[in-house]
Amino acid sequence: MKPKDLIMNTPINELFKYKANETTLIHVIKISDGTVTTLDAGTWVVCLHYGNSFQKDENTIVMQGSTYSKADKDQLSIFLNKKLVTHD
Image 1 (cartoon, rainbow, N blue to C red):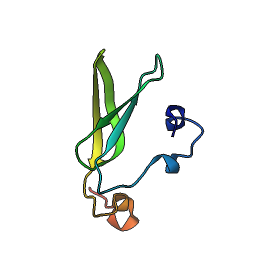
Image 2: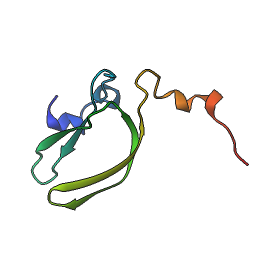
Image 3: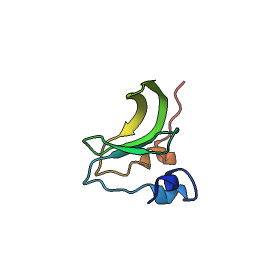
Image 4: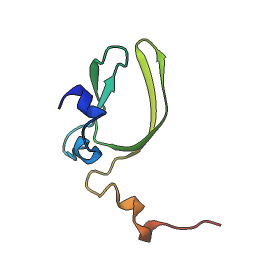
């Protein structure tokens, strides 16, 4: 996969690889020159949404994300209708 394929010309379902026996890799693209840096999370997780992500300084990116870390379960099962509840 080429760096540009991470953000364009590739269907989103082809960008995700479910490898629960491996650690999660996060690819950071430097906008100014297109270089890609890969960070290893050290554990397997699925991040369903990143929020409050920002560049603190030249060498620091802060990312906050909701993650799912049960590799032996279907991480998308939390969205099944039978699991939706209403709280008053």
